Length: 156
Image 1 (cartoon, rainbow, N blue to C red):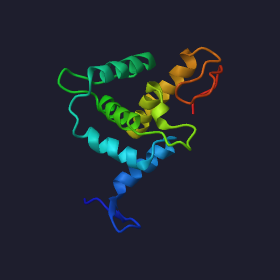
Image 2 (cartoon, helix red, strand yellow):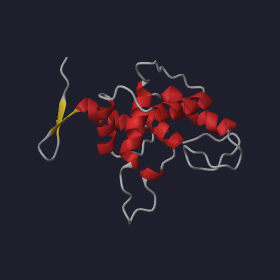
Image 3 (cartoon, rainbow, N blue to C red):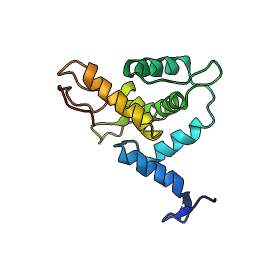
Image 4 (spheres, one colour):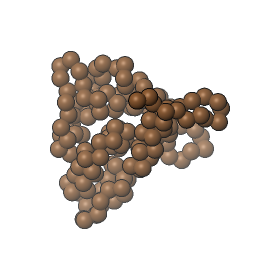
């Protein structure tokens, strides 16, 4: 079964799967633009092993949220790889002067939440959001939804 394509205004074609994946990501309240989304996913396909720092960072976040990662000595969980790529893309993107908030300011926890959205890992995303609101201190800012943690309220 072949993959269908969508003709874009500039005459180039885009696979409907790529477009559908991005639309699903947006449906999960994703905030990363389509160019960075596609670039990160494309680059993640060729990265075999992220840095030890990135692996450790994601392992710490995942452990706190009770999310199981599948890292081995020779390869990393695809979510860790995507985090590493996305981190490098977003941190390297300069903040325009006219923009008050920019994704380069995104914390590691929020960045990993975006990775879970990008991979469509809804179970892990919900688990992570619930954990932060359940284990976080009331009144502290949630690192994912950036709203004060209040009892009984869920992350968005």
